Image 1 (tube, rainbow, N blue to C red):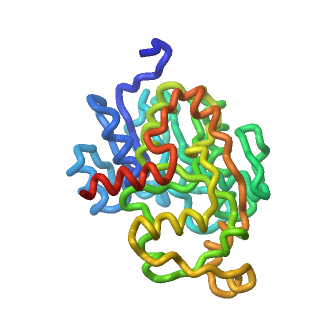
Image 2: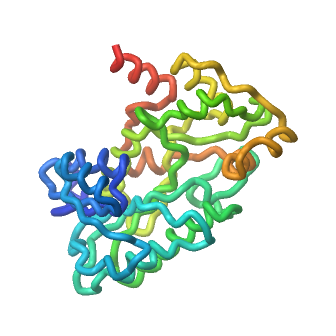
Length: 297
C-alpha cells in the first residue's frame, strides 16, 4: 500500500442508496453509517450491516450531531428536483460543527456541468457551462463544497460522472413501453460507467484523490444514446426502440429526455485512470453485459 494513501477510521455516506451500499461493502472493517430519509431505506441498510441514521436534508432541524468527526464522508444525495441551487448541500454543510469536521469529502456530481460540447472531448480543465437546472444544481453543490473545503481545510474530491448502469439499472421498462429514441445518426455522444466500477472509483478517490480536485468518471468508450438502448434491448431480448427525427422527438419525448438529447460530449478519463490508479472491471458495455449474462446462467 502507498503510505500516502488516506485510510479512514469511519465512513459516513449521505444518501446511501444503491451506489452507497456498493461503496460500503468495499470498506470492510471500517464502521459505516448511512444517512437516509425513509424508514424503508433505514431497514435496508440495517440488513446490509450499515448503521442507519434517518435525516431529512430539506429540514435543517433533523441534522444535529452528525457523526462526521475525522470521518470520510461520501455525499451521494441528489439535489431537489427544481431550482438552480442545492439547498440540501447548504443545510448539510451548515449542520457540521467546525470543531468536529470530517477529514475528507467525496462528492458525486454530473458530467452535465460541462453542458453541450457538440460531441467534443472535455477534460477537467474544460470550463463548466451547465445549461439546464438539473446541471446547475449539481454545479452549485460543487461550488459550495469546494468553498467549504478551502475555508475549513477539509479535503474535497469531486467526481463528475456520466450515466450509471449495471444490474438493476438498465432501462427495461422504457424498452418494454416502446418509447422511441432519436435516429442514431442524430444521437448525442454519451458517457457511462458501470455501478461497480463507480464504487471502486469512489474508494480510490477517498484514498488517493487530491484535495480540491475534479475527476471525470466514465469508461472512456465512444458511444451514443441510441446505440446504448439498442445494445441493451438486444441483451434483454426485447425489440429495439422505434427511432424518430428531431421534429417528432420534440413532440413526443419528455422535457427531461430532450434535455439529455440536446447535450453531446465525450469525457476524457485519463486523470481518473492515472491518478486514482483505476483498472476498470467493465471497460465496455459489451463486457459488462457478457458478465451479467454469465451470472444469470
